[in-house]
Amino acid sequence: MAIIMFLIQLAGATMLLLFAVRMVRTGIERAFGPSFQRVITQQRSRVGAATAGLMLAVILQSSAAVALLVAGFSASGALSFGAGLSVVLGADLGSALLIQVFSFNLDWLVPVLLAVGGGLYVKAERRKLRQAGRIILGIAFILISLRFLRETMDPIRDSAFLPAIADYLVSDYVTAFVVGAFLAFIMHSSVAVILMCVTLVSVGAIPVSAGVSLVLGANLGSAIIPVWLSRGMTPVARRVPLANLLLRGSGAILVLFAIQRFDLIPFIGSELSSQTLINTHLLFNALLLTALLFCHRLEAPMKRLLPEEVIYFEEESPIYRSALEESDVDKPHLAIANLKREVLRMSQLVETMIKPVMELYSDYSPERAAAVRAQDHHVNTALDDIRRYAADIRNTSLSKTDSKRVRELTEYAIAVETAGDIVAKRLIPLTKEKSEKGIKFSKNGYAEICEMHERLCSNLLLASNLLVSDDLESARLLLEEKQEMARLERKSRKRHLKRLSDGVQISFDSSDIHLETVGALRDFNSHIASAAYPILERGGQLLETRLIEQDYGDVDIRQR
Image (cartoon, rainbow, N blue to C red; front, side, top):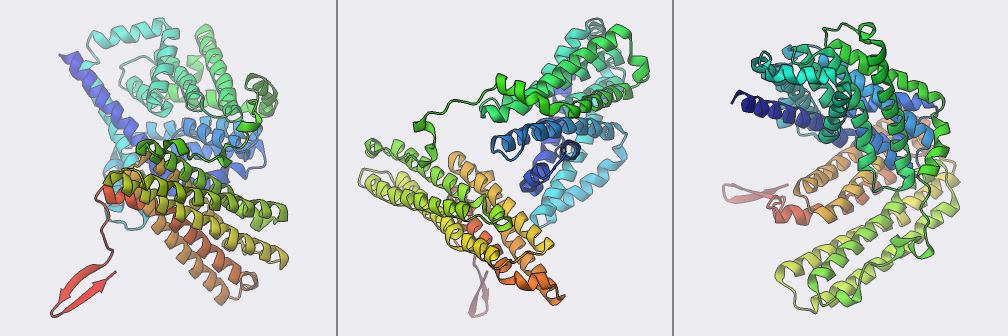
């Protein structure tokens, strides 16, 4: 019975640890996620890229999450192979430093974190403050879960069960290494696994030698995670995670055998202290940074392992092929699915229009501007096809629910087409005017516009995912982002007017273009965010009107 209770308590503490790590990561992604691409891709040296990776790993509490970000940016061509691998190597060291911080006895901080984090999350109205509260709560839960792990080990530490397992792991370090890799892969978090190992060693549940093997195995498992999660991406995206696996995996195996063969543990730390595990983890990932000297040379062998896919002509531009199948018009469920795919294709077309806008502001190219405007023709054609297809579907026998869904998709298609018009008819002419007149934004003004553009691109992706998933929580998040974008626009406008009142000449010159740009970005985002309304309405989380009726005597006053 004691064994069963131990396993239940261990599972509960481990799940709390995993939940807490994820809570912190999602809070940071929601608050600052759109800025990650700029932080990673603006680095010009391998050392700078590694430093950016280190900081992001500490922030996200996951080197695997950073590796996946790098894979996505590599696929889009925004990040070179050498810079991407440098970011990932820095991220590995960042997660190791994070473990060092969490290994300190911070139990005294838990009540403070719970009070501050809970207060912000429950009471704050601004989205970033609420996400800050979520992050602080997540850190508190991490510390609580580590305390639970220590308390779970106390009753069973002196039993025959745990020492038997510990002795086996000491005698068979290869098995311990494999177990560490397996746990990191299954839990999708090397931070959680290594913190758990450190806690087990600190309470004397397992010896240091077994803990070192588990930690090195967790490094291998952590490198496998992004390779597994990126398996459906293009070969270009998968090269960096695979190179990291080869470096980190082979390094972990070599260090494991070196430690066991030459008895190096006394040189790393005390054989009775859990700090030895952290030292091993830190030294191993610091040693991997020497690969910065030659990481760019690994691109050639990675290209041979993962060559470019052969793309046939008819597969070259699937984004320009309509998803509407005329033969499915009389089959409502298939027809609605086709309609949804076509709206999603429209969103992808509009994404190709909005993404290069900031590049056109900084370095205007008539050819690229013309290419963006040409995309608007495809968007308009798609909307015309959707209207016709929706009319044909309505001529069949549709249920009330299906008819409403067709109407919702058509309305969102109109919103997406309007968003495309904002790019083609408002933003692109503004980029041309800025270039022709030689106007420059102030440093702060340009940063404000970049922040809005980054958040907008992130929201467009969220809206596209919403079309597929119909997830209620994502719909709420998208609507929150709409409010946040409106707040950013107001904030940028106020700051710009302050710069004008302070007599900043560059702000005078760019005033009209700055204000029109932030207004256009806000309007674009509002149209994209309309995807959330039908889902929130079906979930009963949307009022029919934003006006609240209040009765003051004989007078009805309507307030927004």
